Amino acid sequence: MTAQLIDGNALAKQVRAEVAQRAAALTARGHRPGLAVILVGDDPASQVYVKHKVNDCETSGVRSVLEKYDAALPEAELLARIAALNADPTIHGILVQMPLPKHIDPQKVIEAISPLKDVDGFHVQSAGALMVGRPGFLPCTPYGCMKLIATTGIALRGSNAVVIGRSNTVGKPMAQLLLQANATVTICHSGTPDIGLFTRQADVVVAAVGKRNVLTADMVKPGAVVIDVGMNRKDDGKLAGDVDFDGVSKVAGWITPVPGGVGPMTRAMLLVNTLEAAERFAQG
Ligand code: GUN
Image 1 (cartoon, rainbow, N blue to C red):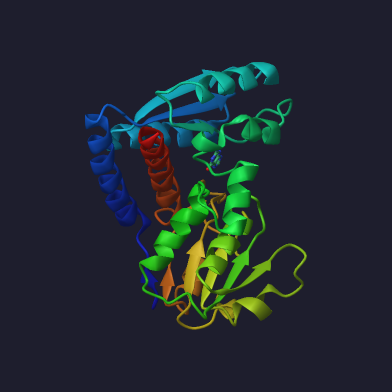
Image 2: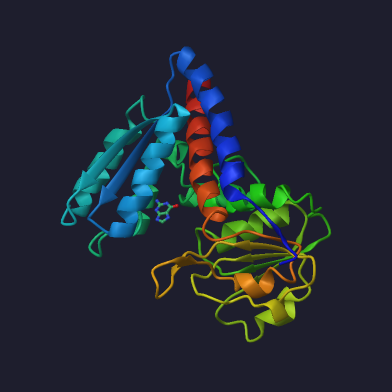
């Protein structure tokens, strides 16, 4: 391995410590930051994610309220619950864990959350704000990826950046953030015949597809920064990213591991967004 490891756990710890300080200051002024987390159904992975998010809040001085509902919860009831949380002055952020059961329209649920409390950054207003460079909440995963890239010291201005994947939650906002940082950005996806053609020119590659080995050593420019958003389960039950870590780490300059790279930073940026929401609320 020649690449330097980008340690997401260490950076997330630092971010949480900063959040804890700001949360304490805000609490002292009578505005304890509050996050509502809604889980519908009993998807095992979602249960684990939600537990982590609630634990993170506890260690950072952010109040969390976990609401768990049966998978059969009618959509209208969920929307009514969100409306109540929108009006609750002790709640500054609302997160509805995805995926939702099939009978609930996720887009409708996301749009029901007040943009002022949209700490996931999934609301169409948040996406629009990012697109035109206005203040709004950034989706936690791409926000965390930008922080991870910043630790390498690479100058994004004038660099070539390739995002593999075009989801609304990661790929598209990631490309926007890199563009804002003055990188030349290419988005590759399932319709791109030869992804390597683009990644071989790239100073930064962000892989966010949800499929193993979409980026292999022969596709990477020596010294590049490689950010792996993937979270795939291997046959042995262990986690693996989208990047062939063993191969790519021999060519890249920097690389995030899975686990311990992007995941912890996604959770840390949720805390940052919640705190931001509470600070804005306190400012009135
Ligand atoms: N499910 C998996 N990741 C996320 C996330 O970041 N936010 C929400 N709301 N649901 C998710």
